[in-house]
Length: 329
Ligand code: TXA
Ligand code: MG
Image (cartoon, rainbow, N blue to C red):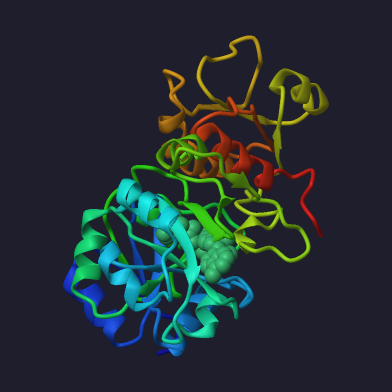
């Protein structure tokens, strides 16, 4: 099939999604975090189509999605005790486990790493889909590489139309931020990406502190942790919005605020992440709001930092990476 001129359909037809996936085609699927662009993880040709549609570099490995924790042992060599504890508490859900892979997982999926990323998503439609397939689904977020992740079927359509045959529409994603990625090394638990499960919740479940190592500039362990990611086309700045605004007095400013409105600041457009200052609600609205801000016709987007706690830490991480100022060339 020629992916460049393809007709992209969206709808709620799980059977259609299954048939396409079995034939080796990529299909966008809903999850509780963000939409994923899925293909048969055991078929390198199918996986290559994901990289092609997203324009994603091949050194960036993909998460494998499975219907339940019982299925994991078919694909990983061993499961550390801490992983079992976290699985019991947080799966199905927005937590991804880095575990030693069995040879059945192609090297293309892990970008040559001996570890595979495993996730059990909670979205009912995708759980049903996975339970009807006899292979894991490799799925990165369903956006062109480097752009903001999609939280609706329409977002996927806008980014990938003409490049994939089908988008399984499961409504708006309820968490809105990608999964938290945890790694296990020498008895330590390491958070490699902050996401839908707060670091505090992981520590509480384990009854111990974890390491948080999410920045790796030269050779990223999780390349989604590359410094520039999730970026809008409109320059985005994060900080004290009143101070930032002074640099842009001649420009059309789009303001993204967490809770309370700052009426004294004139703005061309303004968005609020959560009327009642809920971090969970802000997480759900973040990517959608970034897309709206990008399209509203403003020259710059100014965003304030959120409190550095709970999902606020993951939100701030995404904002840090979306920032214009430290975008590498
Ligand atoms: O919530 C999510 O995790 C979503 C949904 C679709 O499940 N997926 C997602 O995929 O965010 P992606 O590809 O956009 O981000 C996955 C991150 C990347 O930073 C990737 O480098 C890292 O996980 N990753 C995947 N496999 C890995 C591996 N074997 N070792 C280290 N990092 C890995
Ligand atoms: Mg992504």
